Length: 197
Image (cartoon, rainbow, N blue to C red):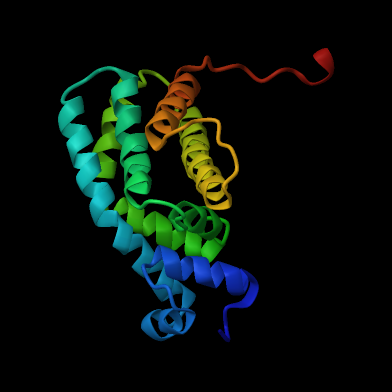
């Protein structure tokens, strides 16, 4: 496990599980570097998520409802996680990788390779009207974090056998979509003047 560094042994084991490899030695042999492992994990899960997102896009059609496009972002992820059974490591793996600047870029690259994700984002953007570009970018970051960490927290709780706020991944998707629609449609405030001038 040389070269694993700050990820630590349990993180490496979780990475192996996310990649579909149960054996730590096999993971190191199979994937080599952390970069190779991250790409392998992302690609292993991408195909199923892409197929689920294509189905969601077909259901959304030419919708002008923000909720339909938010569902295209959220539900493919939660449906994929539900299909993996429990315990799983994928959501926690993604949350962890996104905190590492170099590995974060790899995950972003892999995400941007998804035609269905790009189409979902374009559909969502068409429903957001005159939302200023900087607000759109900021809220997009918030949405990514909300999806990522909500899924990782549920995955952790399921693995540990602790209670979760929602009983199923489908219910998690509903709660996430409720919150994300509210986030996108929230009013845009103006900066307050310092010291109430």
